[in-house]
Image (tube, one colour):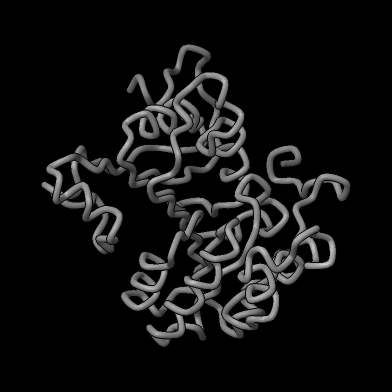
Length: 253
């Protein structure tokens, strides 16, 4: 990603390669399907063209809610059904999952106010203007627990610095995860002068999510059946404020 809140330099910007740029384009049938699908799918170039203009894209003024890593689309379609007053955008990197999510959005009949785009979650500033997002959802991100895998982790200090510029004041970040290491990373890397914790659950399967509306995905249900916890963390974007140098991270509060 570029510097916090700034678009990635063109030479490093994420883009969809055309099928002709792959040696074996027919190996993955979803490569072409994703490009030819049409709405609610957005190719990378189409998504980036909406920076600062998502209300225009949806043809209405409404808070923008973004899910990072939509998987098969169960959560995105469910929440878009629960809250049609919001504009919804899912981001996913895998071709097949983009197509599967699009089908779920259509089956739920929410495609008028919900989209799925193929894009790199580490380059969010290519897609959104400062303060354009109202809420970000991340469900079950890969923890990449080994130190040599650290560069692959999503919930990094750079990620939260980027989000702090793109999420509106009083906007939200909602995390659900089956790995406690992701909770720890969030609390450690979300700067306390930009984010505050407003809710937490040590097992949403047992005591529920800390926010009012939620979707229990098939993936989450696996942990319920095994009696294993799914953690949730709820942060709010605060107006930037000066802190004493000894102010602890969210993890130490």
